[in-house]
Image 1 (cartoon, rainbow, N blue to C red):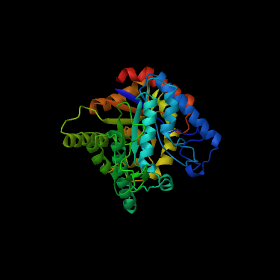
Image 2: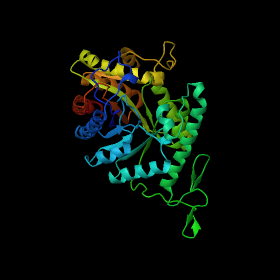
Image 3: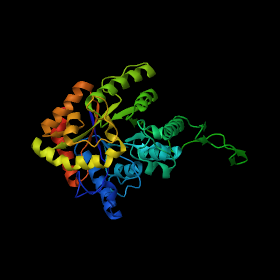
Image 4: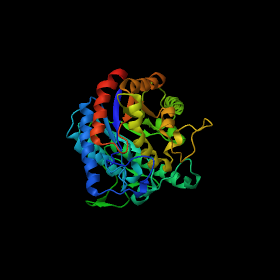
Length: 383
């Protein structure tokens, strides 16, 4: 089993929890936000020292609230690659529609080559209009009819951008003419003629993987058909199983070969290790509640199960007990955490597991301790 670590990259908060302040009332200094970025590098080094395999960050912009303060996981990955030797480095996710596709292709290839093939290309469509629209796109939600047109446009731009990136990686010379992207534009003068094709420099010198977040039914249908790996998180365990199996069905239909158990699918679980179950619950609660105070209004809890057995209505802010019941959070002693993960392994055949160990309010010293405990006490029980 390949084990990854995923972090938001937030400021160390001393007042995390369900009550005030409201997320939008938080505001941190540039110094505190940059301190978080520097400690993230320390956490990436600790991931390797703990014997784990992949370090995942994320891309977010304009978050003065301090929850996610690194806007460029690729640039961050270059720095981390120079401090490590073994771990793979990726982002959950690079928001493709917020990039010029050729700049994203160039930058990832540069990081991948500098790390000697340790880059993983994580891709996503985004979630936050405040980030998307200043950076040239729109974002909607599958379960928000009022945003259906924004969602349609975003998916269209995303698909074209990925067509461009793959073409630029696969072909020594390429051109692409779509609705949103036109490479090269007609009539560019060059040395007595006009440019007809482009060549990306650099291209990846090593094999690379592509992983995309699977958070909605249309994305579940699209990802396996394109041959990308699918990342699943924040969903009731029975919904995970349903999507896991549907992904394999779609993969086989598209590519003509069945997937081995667990292949091309990555499960993310929020974990907390302590000396007792009660201590783990008490330790996890403030960060859990702050997590959902921040993300619940964006609809991230729609993967939880409602009282009727169907996905919860958007906007649910779950309790820790609901998260434990959904098996989205796995907390307890090292043995209890390993048992919770083993249940997923028995059901799904996990080959890629990613842990989310840093909750809002946690210090980075505490998170580094969690990584070492996971590497020493949990990983040997699940691999």
